[in-house]
Amino acid sequence: MTGDTTHPPARAVPPAGPPRSRPGRLRRVLAMGTFDTLFRIAAWTLVVLVAATLLSHLTGLGGDPDATVGPRLTPPGGNGPLGTDSLGRSLLPRLLQGIGTTLLLSSAAVLLAAVISTALGIVAGYRGGRTAELITRLGDVLYSFPTIVLAVLVSAVLSPGQPAALTSIVLVTVPLMTRMIATAARTVARRDFVTAARISGVPATTIMCRHILPNVAGTIAVQGTYALSVGILVEGGLGFLGYGVQLPDASLGLLIQEGSLYMVNAPWLIVAPGVVLVAAIVSINLIGDSMRDRWEPREARALR
Image (cartoon, rainbow, N blue to C red; front, side, top):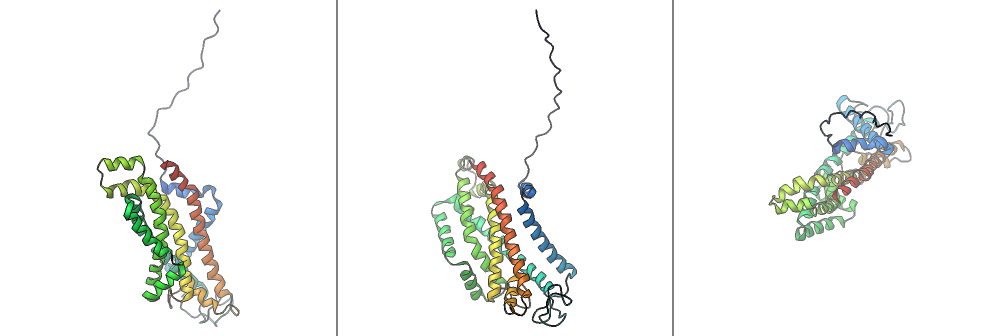
């Protein structure tokens, strides 16, 4: 006796569509904050600082940073939300101007340092041998100097000002960035696809630009964020010592230096720029930590 041999109807299979493309790196970086509260807080802190600076520059938010608005050294209140400085100027517009100067100067310096470090690091990682040894040793010479000592030395030689501060930040951040990028590039250069490209006669420049550079982009981004926090700290130190941005311009370091002269009678002059400086550095470091934890492991697994 045979049993029931009926089968349930087969489910209709939808037609296969085009393959989904993998999300780009920029989308992954933007999406990493979805589950990372610290990343979101850090990112929004920087957004607020940049937005306030831009609005101040474009619309005059807060007033003229060089205008006298009341008596000197008055506390926060009627003469200004953050009080007035030793010349009777409102601290708020000067703080906004200082944020813009510090962020713009540090970002420009780190961008230049990233270009230099990427070129040197990839060449050292791909070439190896004496080329890598020479680049590494030059970096070690710069890295052997304490950060602030090297920055002050460069600023003293070039004369204090924004160009000297920019050059100091570049020289301070290039050695470590170059070393980290060279290490990552050396790992990529040992992969089979790079070896195959060499055997096939692909020019070295093409290999470095099309095969190695995309695979060390994560390292460049992570090291760039750390370098930016170092750049802001160096600018603050130079401004405090009088070797950075000069009057009548304002920067966070210069505002802290001015406020330190009146810490007893007008402590608000140093509190506001000090809090902003710390908030910017901590936020950038938190972003760098999130990128390191969520991006670099993916690239490391892809290289195995």
